[in-house]
Amino acid sequence: MTINDIARMMANRQRYERQSTEPKLPNGSTPPPGYVNPYCPEGLDITGMKESDYKIIPVDKNVEQKMKDITLEEIKRGYGMSDPNRDPVSDLIKSYDKQIPAKDRINAGWTLEKVHQREVRRIFDFIKSRVPGWEPGKPFDTSILDEYQQGIDMKA
Image 1 (tube, helix red, strand yellow):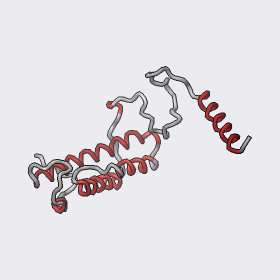
Image 2 (cartoon, helix red, strand yellow):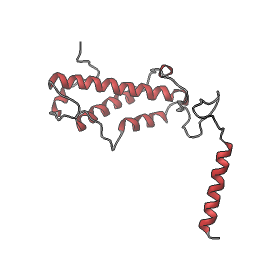
Image 3 (cartoon, helix red, strand yellow):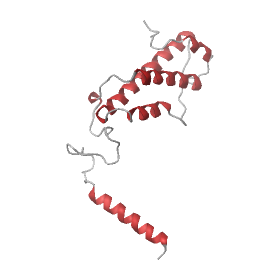
């Protein structure tokens, strides 16, 4: 028996032990109350949640501002399209989640995602007011975004 065979046997044994300790749920069922998903970071398990369960909560103003800045830079770089090879929005949410209590993590991520979505709509409205007929992904002179003021809606 080689060292590789021994290592493979130990890995299989550990996998088997892990599987036998996890509760088995019928396919499509939600887990019982108090169930902790072992594959999900604390405070981020959304199993069984509905959209109405999420709430907008106050988040750090610096993080909110950073989200708006990231949104603007993404739109400048991709002419309104996000880069499939990078995701600074998710990276910011993940790093912020690590700094706050577990009970607030889901709602903080939801809140920051809503900040991002609102800012995207505002920037798109601003671009369309300066470049009629513009569609996301269509190149435009990004210098017009130097005039953009965050948080101000162009539609009245």
